Image (cartoon, rainbow, N blue to C red; front, side):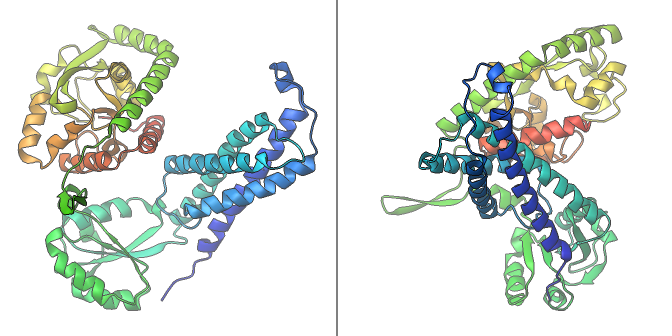
Length: 473
């Protein structure tokens, strides 16, 4: 039985209204700024007589329809409980830019008057800002409703081992996702630290009947790859039930996710591994790294000087901390950081422990640097000279690489791309003293799904983490 929640209609409708108003406001604001103020004349632009406002209003109606259809085509309307604001910004930029190309093409055939190129640029910028602001506000309303227990989606977990425990821990600890875990099905009650706190609903074979009669809308399947026959039986038994199933891949699924069939002269081959980045991809990523790291280094140069002064006043020793790390193809390079510990602290790594949050070797100013992740800023130089990338798996020392490569499957595959200032694992909370196996999963996922948009998405989430003072490793 499908539950009908008022928020499932109200929130998407509010988003559509917000988008339409933001686009219309962008048009009217751009028209007024270009033709009824002296801003652009003072900047040296040629004077243009104001065209009829009616034409721009009619044009805005066409643009609103086009953009709303594009948003709908990308499934950006509806309840999307786990959408991150940084991902939303990237999608908004993509849709607005695509829509603007359509608008410019249509404007070419509109002969009543010529649309100002300045206005088009202003509309593009203002629409991105306005649409994103409206969506951020709507998302805030949505998450506040979830925190108050409203409009929640009832869900169960099928499985009871560490994989199920991880799913429960992530979802139960984030009520803003809007998912209410009612319990789990497993062969026996779990002894896991997290999922054991949820109600045990019975064996896996009892799940289909429970789904059929209790109004469950979402089932997370956390079974291992070797349980594939049980999975097929479960899906078969659930035929006809209006429930969304989401399967959580285990390590083996991630390791084999790049298997593809490729035909060469009529002979089918299974491609088990491919090159992470094409030649064009490597060039694009490198140009992006150079441009962005160079700009940030230039803009933040006064901050570098202030940090250097703070380090010198706080403790004796060099401003920069240098350490050999392993990068692309297993080659070592010298990674730079602002020194956040007493001079020579690295000699006691083995006894102090790595990645701990309250390392007694940190200086007073160093704790501030770690807290704000400002100690990582010198790595922008590593990015500029080509030792690292802005985004990629975090680099480790040679002895750590040797230790993990002996016991963690696919660990060395992390070195098939440049190591990064930040990474997909880090923005998902896997930093410091966390599971290396989990980090490898996220690093492999990043490599297999790389795109420039993915890099921008990770950088935006990193910026948010820095602003909210989430400590980096």
